[in-house]
Image (cartoon, rainbow, N blue to C red; front, side, top):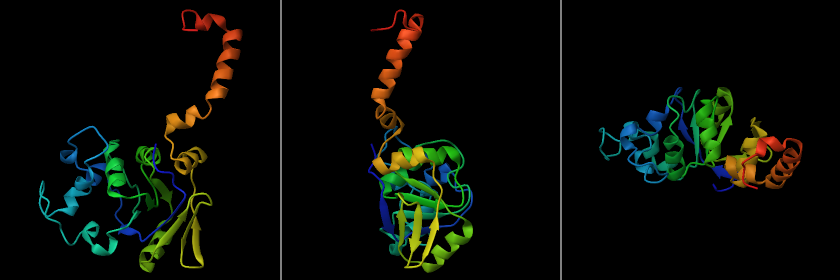
Amino acid sequence: MAEPFSILTSRPMPLIRDNVDTDQIIPSREMKSTGKTGLADGLFAGWRYTAIGGRDPDPSFVLNDPDYADSQIILGGANFGCGSSREHAVWALAEYGFRAVIAPSFAPIFAGNCVRNGILPAVLDADAIAIIEEANCPVTINLATQKITIGEDQNWSFPIDQEAKAMLLEGLDAIDLSLKMAEDIAAWQTADRATRPWIYLGAKQ
């Protein structure tokens, strides 16, 4: 289970580049295990460090800017998270401390991986993202109302699938969400067993 997502306020880190792929988020050379931890140091390693395989920070890359040291939100470009389906990319983002990515569009598999790991992929058009970047101030994301707000009078709505919304609000993965309907599933199986007993021949009672 992930930490439930409700209301998040943070100064967003701008990474306004289209087609940021999963190999840029976490290069394959940084994936040294199959676990969800130990990946934060490799996040954006190809841009974050001055040399491949090194750990000397490149001061020109935004992740190394002390102004965004505590950011939990990324402002991204179109097709964020494209490329391979590696879930390590989302694990690295989550371990580093990011809870949301705001972008005009996402690669579908990446967006699904975000939801399963407690990160909100919020779709907002490029013009709105440009306004947020220019404001350079904290942003509040309210998942329940599906609103992104800066200041007192600027806010935008973002779409989200209702199942994904429920998973994020409650910190559930797909299995957890299914188990919430365990009684309904059991009742259906009981009724189906009575209607089609031959389906269950040899099955454990």
